[in-house]
Length: 119
Length: 110
Image (cartoon, rainbow over all chains, first blue to last red; front, side, top):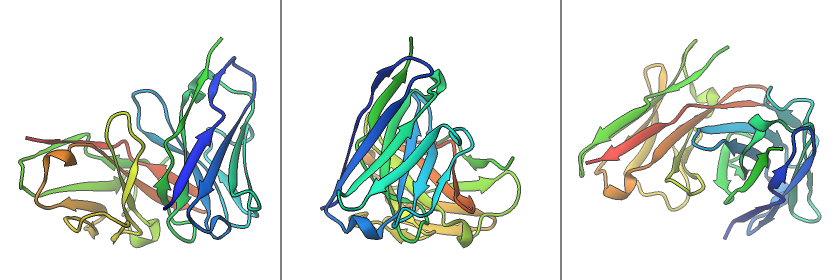
């Protein structure tokens, strides 16, 4: 069965960096786009970034453009989110999600990893 | 800036039918927005119910259905059950490489 396991969250001071990982299994990772979605405490879901199956296309929400970088390693069935210049408003649970099909929408979710940006 | 709109809250009686909607502050939702619906209970990860307007995800009961109603996407739950009490989020594909979530609907079953 599909499994997505995020890791790498933690507490980080403002302005610092953090790298999240998502280990995928149970499906042919290299044939699906992948999303990152976040949820601030007590708030709704916010789409963050997406990467195509081959890694050649990447798109970002305006709120993270220029600070976050999505990447993947299909040989390791792994998805990453490099987060630089972190701000307190980036505090959230970060979910990785498998795309439904052809970069249409998130379709299967991991359990999430909490990132707290605080001094 | 176009915003994705959802009812903040909704209530349904057990066994009843409820339709939640997902609209745009500017323009109509169409199948080209690939509307999808995601259910989330407190403290849990979201679960995808519907994608590409009306395709049910694996394992989702057929009492959940998606459609376009007028100028909005819609999620209909028939025969509501107590464990349907959750937050429901829609997300729309807005333009090249951009997806936007609605603010979510808190559904109460009572």
